Image (tube, rainbow, N blue to C red; front, top):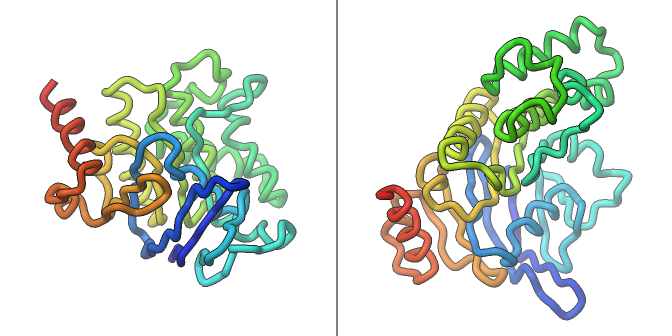
Length: 248
């Protein structure tokens, strides 16, 4: 369970989050939609302690992380796998060593055979074929790099997956593939997933619940079916864009 209660976050005089309250039940896929600069990514960073709320409380599996000291955040971060906008792979390492990086750090007791087996398993989970593990990131497509980033994230078995604009820079076909991979991984690994996005079509396709932010506030939320009936102007704009893209 992830829960926000009246969370506010300010940077100087600029208030980015304005009293955010919601809950994410275990195993649910939550999409957080909104225009650029409305606080979506700030919300994710508060979950893992990269930022702390100005006021309000955040719980992760019953632990209040709102003002948790840095030295106590390690167990929380072990539960959370974060996938950023860009793959952020190590260019000097092979795909194998990129995926193995977290395993070697968090599981020093693993043998080379155990690490190799887990790397192969995770590359298979993201539908990358044998042989890719010997390549460097610059030798594979951007879409494949995104998959490697996902494999690296799930390798350490997080309970919670946090996606910050995971389809940025991808063509529509690859975007659709990555979104359905998020759905597949979330269901297969039984993770709770939070996806920051501005893509209503993706949210309608795979989300259990959708929150729409505008200027730091939740202006509407509900299941995909409920959001389709929304009368809020911003939600209607998002829906119109999704329908236009679907028909193009």
